[in-house]
Image 1 (cartoon, rainbow, N blue to C red):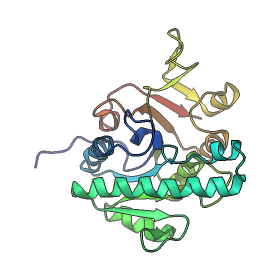
Image 2: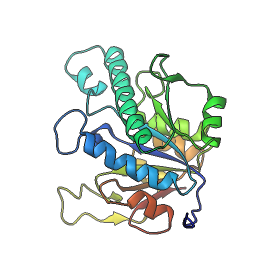
Image 3: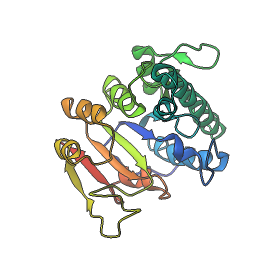
Image 4: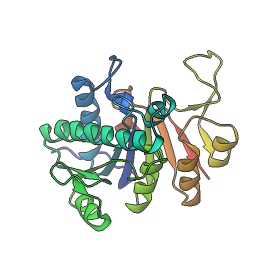
Length: 241
């Protein structure tokens, strides 16, 4: 086998939204899109990088939206957590079809479909080069999957969080709506909070800042983008101290 390019990171967290799995559909899972993202993950896994993943659930159910329509907030958030488990199982299936051993680890016990979250066991999976997909958020209502990704990244001693989005970094305003939007190459945690930049929610940014965990925001729609950044190429924004 040809030598793999070297990367500065040995263990990373990849956070993607549930909407990323919808493709062009307005709801649910689009299997070819799930497969495309799984291929991106496999290409990085093949470099010897240990990968954690957190996937949102907004393509199936979003707790805040349910709460806004009159549903009790805690119940709505638990329903959103269950949606993330469905997405995690879909990604696990796609990765294992490609020969990548994967474990879905749920913060809510459902032993028939996922492992319970036990930190030391999850670390061992990573050491054995298995992809770990952390599902059901933190297991607590009122916390987003952004916060869950930052929490798990810290617990797993990840060196960086990769936040896959529809745009190639962090902008001062929505580039989909404003042609004059300016992209940042680097931006501080404090600026993200002060300027309300839509990177992650405030709790996640504060948790990353307190633990000096950098966040790299990149486009998940760019083929080879995830692997490219690990090789020192591509366009992205780094959120740092």
